[in-house]
Length: 128
Image (cartoon, rainbow, N blue to C red):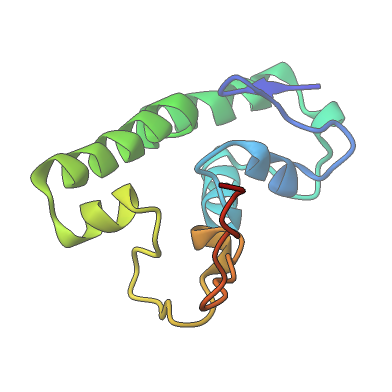
């Protein structure tokens, strides 16, 4: 099982799809990395040689920001928006959709479970 960028790449999957387990690597980037490393995408993770694994690791370290570095950069960008008090920062603070989606209906994933308010329903007064 090859370990690339601190992630165990699945041994039985083709390396093209196994690389996607690394945070920040999608299909397009995985194809570009394998093309540059001159490795066939259908090769399984368990059949990669040490030299091939080292080439993939080297390309990722030199050219791309993945895993911890990328997570840190993204969280720093969000923190900057919050500190500046920008519209997007406020949306992050309030846990609302950031990219202009409608919120009158939908957005339940971001807003959480709907709380149904019933008009006129109050708690009964206690005994006097």
